[in-house]
Length: 248
Image 1 (cartoon, rainbow, N blue to C red):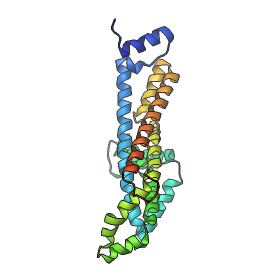
Image 2: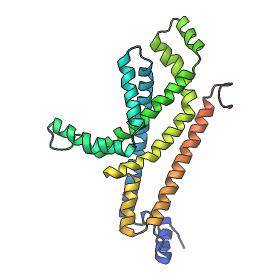
Image 3: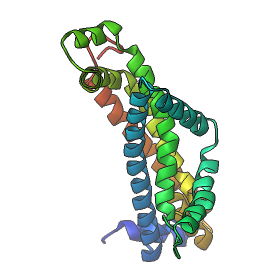
Image 4: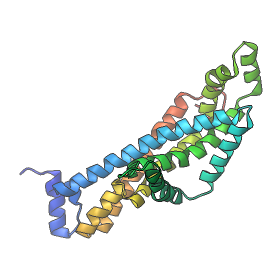
């Protein structure tokens, strides 16, 4: 007798009313896989974007001109001190229609997925700016002076000397922020982005299997964040500076 995964879960539903339809129903499977794809898209794009924002913001914080420093300070305070769901609503329900009217478009200027990526990027980026700033300030002043003595410009010193050291120092805090960002992608549910929580809610509303789908969601996010933390910790040990910070 041959057994299959789909057959087992179909039997589990018929015999014990324990429903995991994404394993045996093609329509629900398609919804679930689509949710996985959108969750991965949101997480990857917002992580990359938030890292770029964090690096740019940390660099501008050290500018000799007051305007970039004030602008970054206002940005950090605005995004660190307001809930990410309100930020998402502001971008999608307030800024989105305003931009559409301003450009005199018939269709929305940006999709809900794009607004979700922008909102998550700016939210996590505000924390990344502070994380990188702390890492930059932890670089010894003597190292900066040595770079200047060798004739490196301010920009060369930042990108070739300060930033590589600051990144290693910032990695533990950065790890925590990126893990939080992965979990925060579920907020995109609020503007109908078909990510994993949205897809799961569609499945449990059709099959009345809320408990099973919530267990799947909990298991998925525990597994994904656990793997991510493991990989980041291994990377942290691999690039750690001997004698500085946590022992390798």
